[in-house]
Length: 160
Image (tube, rainbow, N blue to C red; front, side, top):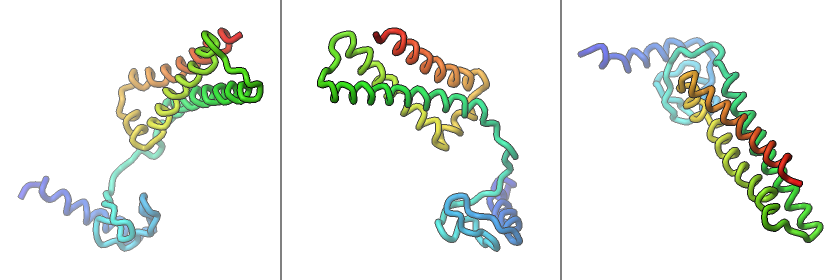
């Protein structure tokens, strides 16, 4: 029997020893795992592992990129809602180039930024972001801020 075959058994023993005298909650359902005898939560039946994590994860770049995408999506959605609201009240819908700039452009920006922000905000997106190299993370952050700048510049400078 190799050490690789023994690893799961050793992991379960280490997990049981760790939780024998500690009041730790299940990360999934918050059930107390004190005195756990298996490698699964007795409440939600999720598998559990004992692992080493960073004491403080570096979140600065992730938060900066997320803020840019949320701001861009929010600004696009708010501009679109204002235009639709004013158009309904005044019964005067924009046409031609004005329609593109004050309806289509904000709708497009919001439809790109909001799903990107949601994907990045989810745990899977955060893990993906952390696995990227420094240059790739920088491009994601810059891309969010450039999208916000392009939207603000295009909307506020070109709309009469």
